[in-house]
Length: 281
Length: 266
Image 1 (tube, helix red, strand yellow):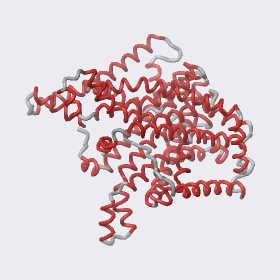
Image 2 (cartoon, each protein chain N blue to C red):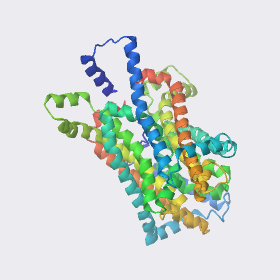
Image 3 (cartoon, each protein chain N blue to C red):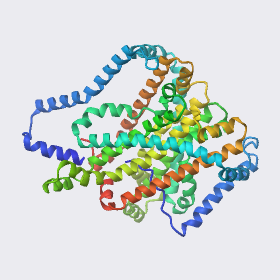
């Protein structure tokens, strides 16, 4: 933000300030071209190199693309992609609900917060994949063990951010609400939770990438379907182009889910962005 | 920035509450196993698990496994940081470089690092290199972004002042940019340290490289749940210790600049 300010200030000295419509369009186009140069060159480079290298581990990109169209458009979507995504969203949804409810309770009560602190610190420091064997004993190798691991791994960033968000509500607001005799329930839903939402979303975004990781890992350890299972099985049977299509698919999924989340966050938090004035110019 | 902030900074009188909290949690676990809510064959009484944990902690093999996990954690974290910090500095100080690389970075960042496990196993086999590569890849992105933010958030007045006093580019970088970006890098290290541990354990679980993760799986498939739970407790304590160490480091690095950092955080 500060850098943008310096940039325009420095630019303003050398260039006439008001450029007119065509100039601004020209600038936007130049900017876009600048941003797309490297990706295009990189993609072309990968395409060319894998095409002529003849490497066993890095098959030609054209071949990977052909396999990708064969496998994922849309033959295996019902058998692998949907189960993976279903388990991920189930675990993530549980984590969001549990994290927000518990986080609000812990954020409001100093007593509970202090008492729960050591346990929370221990559980959130425990790498979630270490609990996969435990989940397998508890739920067997079906869907629920994976949902459990995803929920358990993603709940901590949401919980901790909710606690911080709830604690960060301006005390003047709460005092004012109290003196207007607004009941506790309305204080919670109208003041505390909206004020905590930006922090909760920050936690949810961290959790989303953890959810994708745990989705893949839980399928790699014990599963008979899912994208993670597909990728590992392809590697074990030396089906290299198939393995690559799985990796590409996971990359695309990670990117798309992250992008969807950013769009949703911008919609829900539009008031916050305007308020803070950092609308990312 | 997303911060897994310390939940509370309790002192003295809070100690009793914390001990009570731990006691209640342990009691709940004990009740679940004693009452038969969880089948006893797979969930031995908590007391036995603690006994096994202390027996393991007294012997050498557990520490060897911890050492192996920590070695992968350290090499990966080190490699990731050594690559990410200079690149982040360059991208943070040049707007053109930032714009050129932005699309590639934004596309690569959300790629789940575990998706690369099969490829890495093919290329590097099942030893330390695989672990190092995966940890380094996972750690690279948070370190890169923390460094970029740190360099971009340098106080412009401080830069202008340094320029007005005739400091050269290198001197400005050393005396203004670097110190002011250090706290961001320290935060990046704290976030990255727990990501690095997750990836190290995951790699051991999935690939079977020696370390705590593999020891857990081995205990499970050998039908020794007591040992498995003891090892899980050891893993949690390791994660907690690393968190505490990096939290302390971060507070040290932050301590000389609290006022300014609070400004930036707003």
